[in-house]
Length: 441
Image (cartoon, rainbow, N blue to C red; front, top):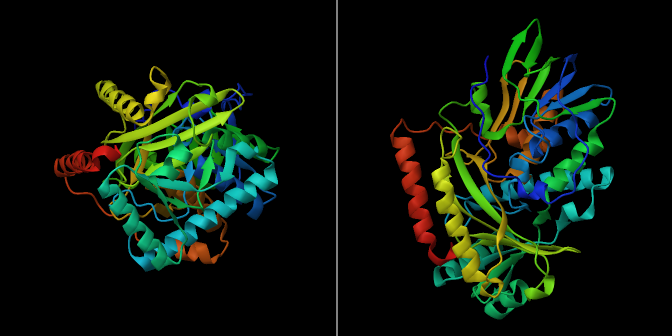
């Protein structure tokens, strides 16, 4: 099977770009045989490799990534590992109480697994910090969304804390927000540092990691899968596909995956004292299609990250003409929130590929003999990718767990409407949603 296409990655992966230069893993340049092959070295792929090393400690595991580790989608998110329901298609993130309790259990299992990797492998503290997050509201409608979400959390038995405008200013240094809702369970990541650290710590004489090794073909012959790269081949009896929406390029889940891009801008570093408030915080919008904002600080100063705008890209590529419009929106969102930082330029701008399903379920399971999928993370790659990777490893090794049993009860991704209805409907839905977000954008 020839792998068709490859998702575009507009701009640099900012989280990776601000880190010190590190040693390369090197590309695959020979023919190798392994007990296990994992395709993708993001959150899902590295979680799968880690779980395989626990469940099959004598086996050889090979991980391939098309880009450098940390430069792909794993280094392009905003760094929120969220434990609570966070359905981007919902007006207030929540859904059915019973279903949401199951989602919370799965998310927390993934966070616990990530925490174990951090502790066992010695990942730097700044890569993984359980400090919670805020839903920020800048409008009456946003405040109402937060109130509804807080009531839903109460039904779920989950704690939250309402914040007024003054408290929001004390935290963010901005007068833009009229309220917020704090929830304590979110982990804030430096996502590129996290995946780079995990990859370096996992590598051993049994776990090989190759980057810049794009898989261009995947076929099964004589009981082995053959993954062809540009300069080498890996043969393995079992493969875990951890490539999110790129699974479609491998010929799987056709017409069942929704490909959306979202975009981020990161400011240049500025003196920490130039902006009041706390030096590190993360804020998601009360309206799911509003602006996510983070402030990060270290010895070199502070930076602000703004993420907003969603575009539907069924071909997994972005027209460059769209980017200028997106960057103007980012600049406007940044300026209205932080007028005291007037003149501060953005240093990095990027886009990242999200994969969703219409029924908000993953593309998970054994999809061919010896081929397992840990794909379609529904906009929550950090937590759902981690969960998918660890559960795919359990499924592939025949290991039973209650969490795997729960994963196996989930529906498969729902089929999309025919074209051009799917594209028209998705783009209208996103444009309408962003318009409805109003000042939350």
